[in-house]
Image (cartoon, rainbow, N blue to C red; front, side, top):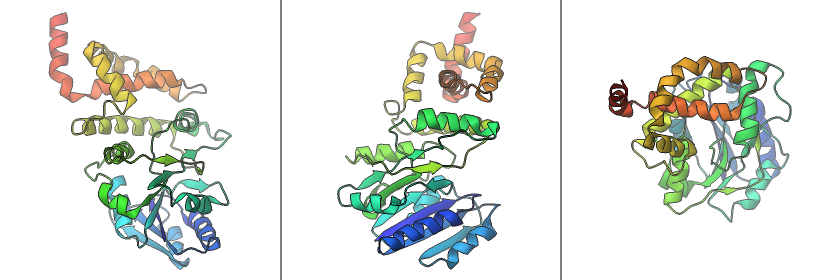
Length: 298
């Protein structure tokens, strides 16, 4: 009945699998838990213990194939009609997590339980910005995220994750758009997982940059401007030619942004402006217009 699918990358998943297994057994359902390691360098020996748990399978891939491909590969190997996707770096909050999903299965094709963050900030301040952003932005968003959702396998076979997205970021956005094009809306319920795999401040900013670059690449092939607030705002400032100013200023003031984001009181409005400046700076398709603007301004 239920295939629980967990892509693993450099994370110890044994406790998560044990908890999921215990809850599935309690519900007396037919299930499996598939864990595919996507070319990790860490925790392989620990995660091999998963194979000793009944109805669980752990497989190691020699090379990293990316977030979209690994999810599709897991789904292709799933045996049952419903697919529950979870990220490896989450913690199950509810003792009735599996039961809550099962109670909603008959009414919806795809259900998201969403994610939350710990009530208290991390003790190590180098992880604070990720926690702060997640707590005050991600948790309040209704955007679909692939870290905690269940979908009918027949629907996944029609949609799938877009494997042309090789780098990090916005594969969830494109997946949700593909669902909407099919007339299917994600149903959100109160069944969250806690995101415990926080990135360091510097790495979180680096991943945000990569996500913005990926968003630009996707937007050249797909219509996303009315779906993604950052793109919508960026296209507005492009019409007013402010993107050239943003691009010019970005290298000059970037370090002041970073100082704020890695400090004790990060400003999320400043982070919004930072992302607008960064997308202006890296939009290579606008180089000709940018050069023309600088020449005419001299």
